[in-house]
Length: 403
Image (cartoon, rainbow, N blue to C red; front, side, top):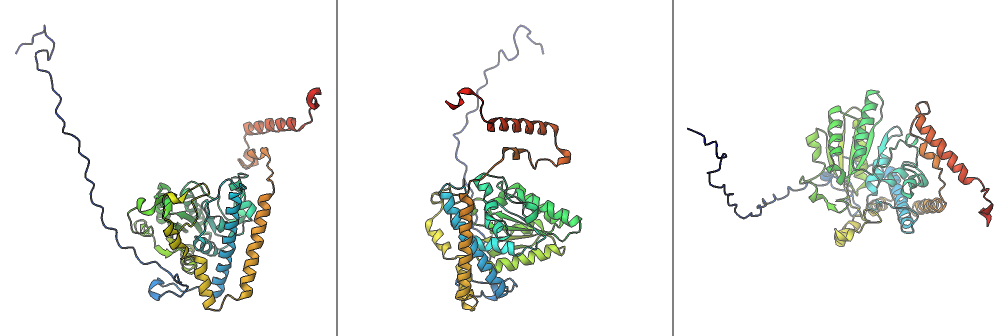
């Protein structure tokens, strides 16, 4: 075979024709499988305020009446606080506020189950959990007013900063719990999560590390059924969030999140288990966010008002109140005292939010490094700003300044 060097390769070949492509057809969507039946909720007091059947209790017993009365008081006070803060937000006293109206049973039960040495890792929606653990309103609301990133002493209250990024605090809780275990301390970490947070990778990592290391941590997911505007069935196909615990090798509980008695019993048992070396637990409290995601949200765009009305009928405070009344454990004098405490707190909250916050620009440089490891460049910047502030505060010597 000889090669014609006077012609270029392919010169005498017919041109290549592109293949004819058939018109594109839309991909057929596979039929969605029918959802698996949701398991019954674990509950101790039903919607009507009656003791639930033993079959729904999961083997847990009703807490003593004295405990239930304390939980009732805390929920009533917390709701009055929520209503007051929401009103202040509408008046422009706060930049934003995410209400937990309707979720009181989850948060109050969780905090009431903690021992003084335990740590709480909250989200931005868990202000009433902070309130119940003893943080003053002015310190809780400092971040929502823009005064501080976190207005309270975390070490004093054993509460981490309220986390706005979803699920990051779950990893922090596992880290602290693991450190406590290595130091042979009895500390347990309890972290609050929303249903949307469980769709984050950080939640998976926290669940997995906690189970592998058998960390003394409890994950409480407040499933209020919407991650802002995304309903739960658009986030996951599993029947419950609690079912996910199986894949990580830890116990999981699917609890009526509007039954404070059940929430308290289950969270207390999980904390005791963690403290005794039994490892982590995942608890899902099924509840509902009655108010908007925040004051800047319009929930009418993504949920039905009729559903909100249904959940208003499952109010956690009214449910417990009916039970206490039926047991003769809520006399008129007790009611009046609870109302008085709630109104005093509301008045104190209004007062502290009316006062103008004082801020020192030099605080920008505080709490970044310990004094022994302060950076020279930071000290130089602080001195520069201090001199500039002093110059602005000094009386002007310009002759024309008083014209």
